[in-house]
Length: 155
Image (tube, rainbow, N blue to C red; front, side, top):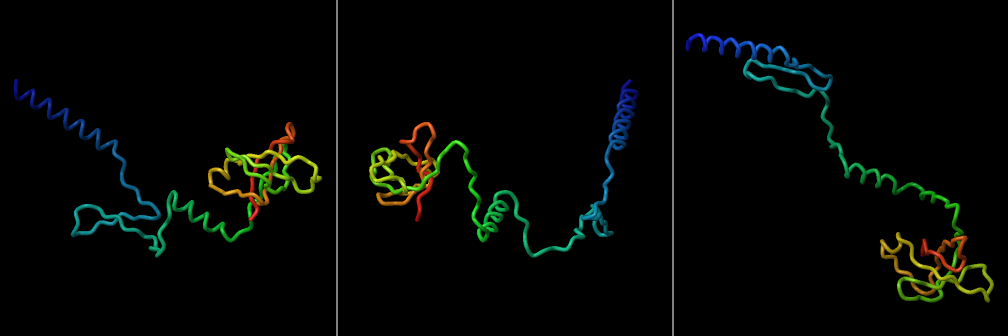
């Protein structure tokens, strides 16, 4: 009984191992690597056939940063034109609390009231300081011409 059970188990294990070996994928050679075996080594060793370069490849963030450095010598980016805003130049006349400013528009008559303008998100995020007397670009909404958004500070 024990010998027959042992015989059955050994047949099953041999059958399973032959099944598993039948489904394994044989090693393939690619153009960049070749499979080389030597008489002194019992396991295969991969040898690169591509010439080694002195520069290393950049991956992820470093590659993106390198592209940004390439852009430094080029011309300035073209700003997208918005359809629903009026963009004007002006000079800061008064500084108010909560990042609000009174801006006198260039080309407007002297008796025209200054526009109440606030700082845009990009200027606020980058901590650009705006002082009285600075020349700025203001975006006005066509719905309320007395309020605006400061989008750029001239140097």
